Length: 125
Image 1: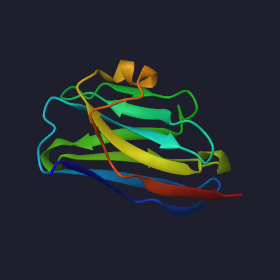
Image 2: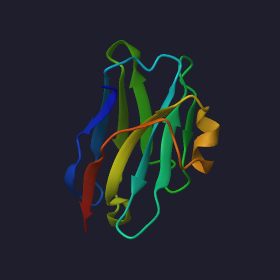
Image 3: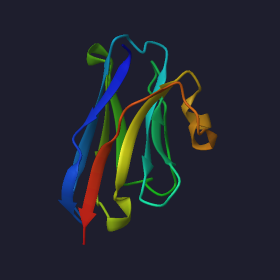
Image 4: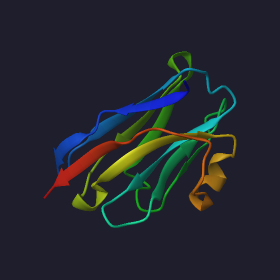
């Protein structure tokens, strides 16, 4: 069974940092772009960041640009999202995803090939 499994969510104070992980299982995502979306209560799912396969070209959503870094360890087939200077409005369920589309297209996309189950990040004020 192909899975993306997120971890690392939790409760953090405003201004703090958190690192989310996404581990692939059941197959390798060789050649795939991988990335993150988030969905806050009562809001639409929002693009956060994506990273292309190989060269590691990255693309970030406007609401998080400058505060988050996406990275990828190919040997482990694992994706990371480093969240810094967190704000209460960053509170959301964060979803990992994989798709063949390049990272520059992800902010327009709502349907991607593979999704994780999500991990909750709560930022207290």
